[in-house]
Image 1 (spheres, helix red, strand yellow):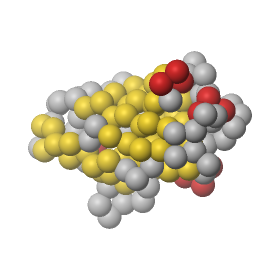
Image 2 (cartoon, rainbow, N blue to C red):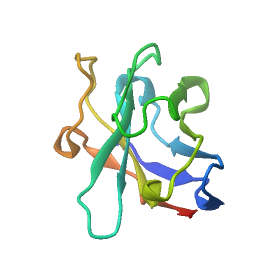
Image 3 (cartoon, rainbow, N blue to C red):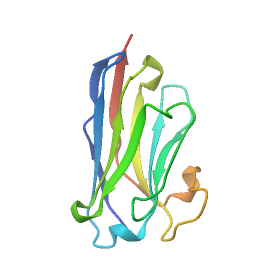
Image 4 (cartoon, one colour):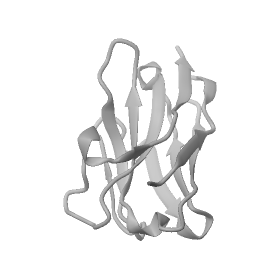
Length: 127
């Protein structure tokens, strides 16, 4: 099973930016669709973004379209989430996840479709 570790979270003012990273330990990193999810206080875990195995296709939640960008560098076994124009409602614990060993369209949006999860990194946006 792929092991994942997120980093890059922190405190930022509304309108600011953060770049999250997710480092994978497995040698089969390129076999998996990768996703980002978030969970805010009192909320269920929700889909944020996903990227295909080769990085050529992406999908985003409506709430983050135009502001967030997911990408991956398979040579570095790393997935990124660039977050711009942050809002207070973006405050949450952000998790990266490894999904299916194949590309299906649309990319998976459900937590149950992802098998391996990182420990999460806190993002707090002050208003």
